[in-house]
Length: 165
Image: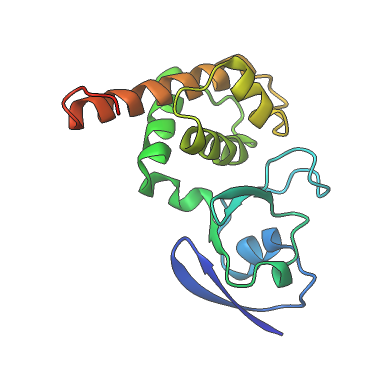
């Protein structure tokens, strides 16, 4: 069956069975390989995407469940201020070790910072707990999220004259 979905703001078509996981539609049909396969049972977070701005494990989400929802992938993370701040922090702090889980880490972190501009350790741990890093870069991931939050706060302060509403 043919499905029409919006991916990174672009209407896309996929002629697949309705129970095909979005992960495989993105990777195999649409050629968007930034989203990774990790465990296949929604436990590791490597396949995290955004569906209407919320994190979703694409390895267990059938394409038929997407409907008119907007799908966002790691390929478009740089198009948002939060995404740019996270990528800048990740590079500055050299968060990545092997890198395999990082697309999912960044996608989850982006949702966190979009909702909680100044997260504490508890906020970070609560959102990021579903993302596994086999290399154990958790302290650098936490530091990267905090640095990205600082970049975002500094940008906001400079564009509004320093006032905090």
